[in-house]
Image (cartoon, rainbow, N blue to C red; front, side):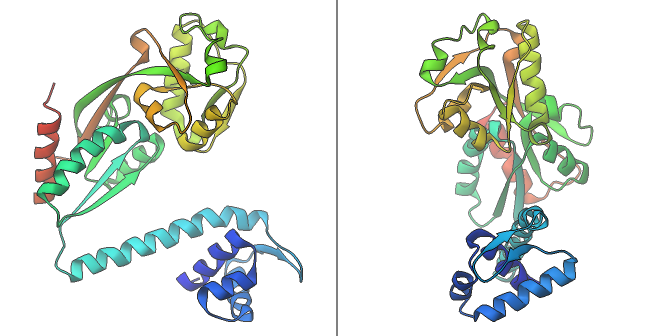
Length: 295
């Protein structure tokens, strides 16, 4: 398996057309077919169903597609990192953030890049579950997340940076029928949420809020990401419960109703390992403490 085979596979998985892929890479169609066959042989599975008139992914091909795309992204990142080093820009900083903390992260990186324009800043958007795995390996220099996730990470020093409150989000016609003080009014609508494997901590928070309001969600529509959930709510498939400021991400007018009670408060935090403090990390920490004075 090599990057050329991966590029051909990803392009073919997206277009399902050998001719288009051949034109994209300025090679012959048989060359594409040969490389795909070699990839399948190396993996020991068929990735495509194909005949003279039709191409489609097998179940194995669908499963492999995400990994192949990730491998190409990683390869490109490695090449860019080597280029940075060859140009003398060896200083780097890697930051991880869950979606609910990107507003806080943006404030920090705006100031940081002004002060340290030559630092190679890598930003990794992760789910809470992915962050836990990353923290175990200390893959990143800073972790922007919720205090709930970070407070039990003994390897790290944590600082709270912001507070928000969860809200119910829904299209206007659905929102009219929802009383935020009476969660039983949610019963006739579906809850739209990220799948638990991606949004485990978020889903636990939602269930806690519902429990405190003496309500248990009925049907839940699970989606692969926050963006998918946002699209579903915008399309009127149900309601969602998430930090209030994330309503800024909705592409169509959505009504938000802040939820009362202590359980609906979410505390954002950032954490880092004090045992490794290189200059870029020290500079970022300085910016962090200026933007968010310690509480």
